[in-house]
Length: 406
Ligand code: ADP
Ligand code: MG
Image (spheres, rainbow, N blue to C red):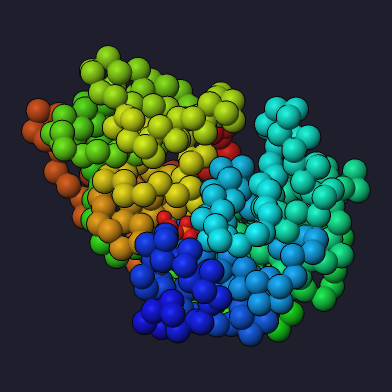
């Protein structure tokens, strides 16, 4: 597809696409939109930042406008996090700017007013609901959801939802929906559990795979081998070295590190913000918005913001530790170079993380360049996995690191 015009969207939709500044569909949009318009069920696997949101929102809007049917709830999008629910709702408001559809983002953790607004919108038969599973289940058990007009169900970031333990909730929700419906599933990765879920809830689906689990082209990736004691000196060195970078995102596995780094950066005179699980939802949103609006240069975060959240043109992502899940690495690196810009992703690897980093390199099918440490920081560890407990009987370790509070 060379142009959005080829889809022959309703003029009011095309107008909003133009207003958003989209000129050419992305690959996942080119493939998914015609299939969705044909009414097919779909499973689409594409990395973060490839434009999946528009790939499902545009054809659903087209269906509503074409049928001129604005009666009741037509679309339900289930997403893993509140941040993502809000973000999709914002995209939706952009695409439906010239169309009288109503929508609501439904998620937990807000105040009483938010809850009342969500309840009344849903009871009134709002056209489009974007919801996290937990909160939606509450609304369903209170019998607020009226799904009889629903004709499209979308599961976004399905892999993430299963990782977060939402399988049972998803199944429970789907049982309350009409059987006659179109179901679309989006996922950044395609592990076996996603295939099983797809088999269960999709009917004769079309399948699209766009460059499985590879960071977007245009991201320069590099890594430093460092001892933990060297990390702080290294990050300060990297940041002081690059004064013209406007947006820097630093991820760490623990909120303890996030808080410590934030304090250090503040003390050194950087403008920065931090996001971790101790913050209330409203505080997280405020920090994220300030970062998007370039009110400060550096955001330090645990991985609660690593997936799905749409922040444009981050110049550099620094992984202060190797992400425990190889897939998380791909998601994080996906924060840069969104929609074909260029970006840089740097990862700090300590001795214990060599093994995890190798599995990332296997997943993306590439060896990531190991950069030399600045000389004043000293020598880092080698890129070798530590010898197994009994050499000669080396057992391949399976399973993930124990879950941490993020
Ligand atoms: P994904 O869900 O695949 O991670 P998003 O749908 O959030 O990706 O889109 C990523 C970014 O790319 C967003 O800022 C979005 O506005 C932008 N985008 C999506 N499609 C296009 C397009 N066809 N042209 C230009 N920008 C686009
Ligand atoms: Mg998305």
